[in-house]
Length: 99
Image (cartoon, rainbow, N blue to C red; front, side, top):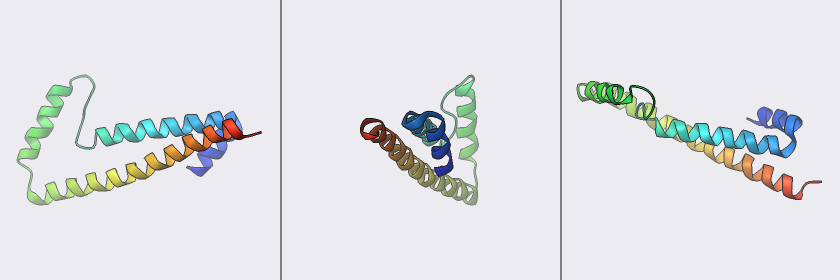
């Protein structure tokens, strides 16, 4: 992430860092919303219904593995959200108070 921030700064100054932070934040929010399955798109009702139906008949070990994967992903997404917030705030402060 730091190397992407450096490239963004070289290409677009602090505005590039703000845009990188916003893109990372939007992607992490999207990942958090879709942690349990598809939430939008074409054919979503049928896809969502089939996912829920297949989860009814899951074995206990499969359900535990899916929940562990979901919790791990949420923890990672939270870190990305904090980093994206730091990038946006750093870019804004750099834009306002920089030379």
